[in-house]
Amino acid sequence: SLVAACLGERVYLEKPSGSRILRVYPNLYTLFLGPPANWKSYATSAAVSLLRQAPYTETLNLYQGKITSAAMYDAMATGIPDSEHYRPWNSRIYLVNDELSNDLGDSANADTMLRALTKLFIPGEPFSDSTRWHGRVNLTDYVVNWSACTTETWLLDRVDANMLEGGLFTRVCVTEAG
Image (cartoon, rainbow, N blue to C red; front, side):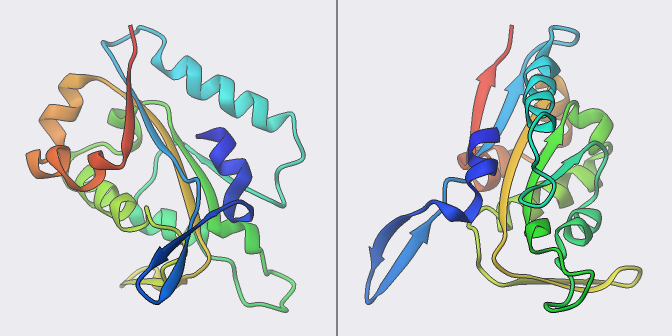
């Protein structure tokens, strides 16, 4: 998923869809699944370490750690064009969760976050969200890449069966670790 994150929206395939031509971006969601303490997070740590050796900060938005969907939307906000705080690369997020039980926590937050990732899987579709605390966030020209680790127990205990059988997990490349 690191390579896909670095490519962002600069590389795409064109796919005919009726009278339109759709751009298909190489975004990738990966999940390392395995028993506790078997080095699942080593792969994500190695990818982040590799990324930190490159001058990525003005081309890619790395977000690592605990997150909610509202926090992800805020992190992806680019600001107002032509302002000094405009950061167009914020919408190209590489989200890394070394352990979903720590980073997403309880079932309610995990469900909301995983549904948000499902919605944002197809890059570039205009998206907006409003919360009482965070106000309105509008996202355009975004590309989300996600790398995460967890155990089968956490996944089955916290994630709705419909999400596992369809929805997000039809979009995730699951790698069995260990």
